[in-house]
Length: 238
Image 1 (cartoon, rainbow, N blue to C red):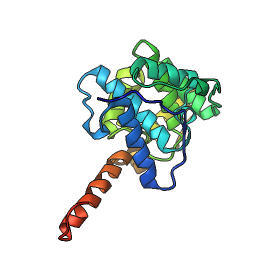
Image 2 (cartoon, one colour):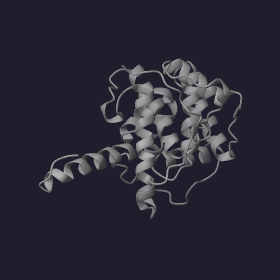
Image 3 (cartoon, rainbow, N blue to C red):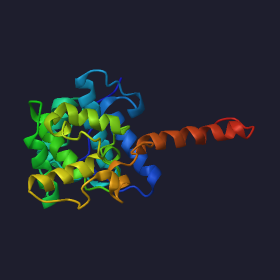
């Protein structure tokens, strides 16, 4: 049985990439009791839990304060865990050190854009708006920095919780680029000077392929390959 454990507001910084991915998988297991690759997202409620667990797992992979990396205050994180992962307990002393995100203007603008385009009720849309906005300033594809398994999960997330905004991305632009282009257009600004996207030298930056292996899936593949190596060499697994 999956036992309740304390979920840390602080995450120790990993010394290498494998350590980061291992911590991400461990966090996802702690929250859901399963490996992210095995997540059942058939229902909307299961999908929402998967998204939240993935985003928190990705935040732990970056080290330091989990709530800051997730874009949430310590009390928002506690409320999220209580509502969606009730088996997780937070040490009371951790909440005695309240944390409020010190948002950059960029993060605040994107969060407000998402909040204005919510299509679901309850706190989850508010939390996701903050988490997406914070994770969007990380360097990888947005779906990767949210800990999701592929771009399709990000598109489903946005279509479910921010449907009016997602519907505006009719040309399937990369989501980060689409967000910033929307912010510029809503302010009456022009993001680029080329009138037709197909004639732009930066076309691949906006519409290029976003496929690939998720950070946590890469970690799992590495472990499996390492375990298989002795067998391939004529030995036996440790």
